[in-house]
Every structure is written in structure tokens, then in C-alpha cells.
Length: 212
Image (cartoon, one colour):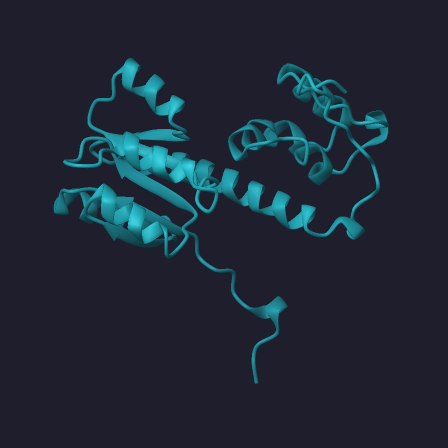
């Protein structure tokens, strides 16, 4: 008989590695598996975009300099489509300039990785991206179950700010995150929200331009 859900092992995170160099893909595969994650690989940007139209992953690591569709365009494509826009993208480069980092942020990059791969730095950055994705997934799960959440209405004025009545007594992390439009912003708040301190939540929301 099937094992009950509560006893089933948690699924391993799925990480997509995209690079046109076989040796780099091999290094990425080893680093990803050493971090306890499943690795899927693509040898070009177009192949990666086509793959993500069929399957989803938790994190994508994309080489910046590739022939044809480069890392910037792959990231832009991932963030353009609703199906894939929550996937954190880490761009990979041997020497990313400040201008390239700024452009990466503009197209939706979550973070970047340097070549050659250094395992400790790699794990810290990939796990940070994974934590962001898991947080966003949990937000969506909570929003799909409104009957299980306290009824605390919030409004979005024309200005775009968010007002949450009764915020002084609000301790539900999911409802705070429901006011946030992107996984990147949700991840920015994660450390503050982790304490379950309502005053810290309100202060963090205020710094991001939300009216509470």
C-alpha cells in the first residue's frame, strides 16, 4: 500500500544548469548534487527556454556568455512568462562587471555565481535562491486556502501602497506576504518575518513603500 504523505521523504530541489561548455556543466552537476539537489542540464539558452515550457524547476543557473541566446535573454524569457517567473535565476560568469550585474537585476536576476565554482559560496547562494522560491510557493499555497487564514482585509489604493487594517495585532506571515507582488521582495522580508515580531514586519513593509 502507498506510504502516507506524512511519511514520504521530501522531494529534492530541482536545479537547472545551463551552459554551452561541457566541462562547466560537469562542474555544476557535481556542485548541485553535492548540495543534495537534483540537477538537470541544458547546453544552450534556447534549449533551456523550451525545456521550461514543459517542466518546472526550483532554481535556474544560467551562463551569461553563450552563443545565440545569452544569459540575459534566458533570464528575461523566464521572468516574462507567468508559468516560470517565480523561478530564481542565478547568472554565471567568470568576471561579471558592475554594469552587467546592474543589467542582470533589470532583467530579473536573483543573484550571480562566479567561475570557477567555489562550493561554499555556491551552496550559500543557491540555498538563498531556493529559500526565496520555497517562501513564494508557500505564499501561493496559503493564498489558495483563504478559509484557513484569519480574515484581515487589506486594500490597495490607486497609489499602489498597501493598507492592512489592524496590522498592530497581525502575526500571520502569509497575510503580510500576500501584500507583496514578487518573490524577490518576499525574500527581502524573509529574515524580518522569521522573528514573528509584528513591529519588525511593519517597519520592513514601510521601508519597501507599503503604508501600514
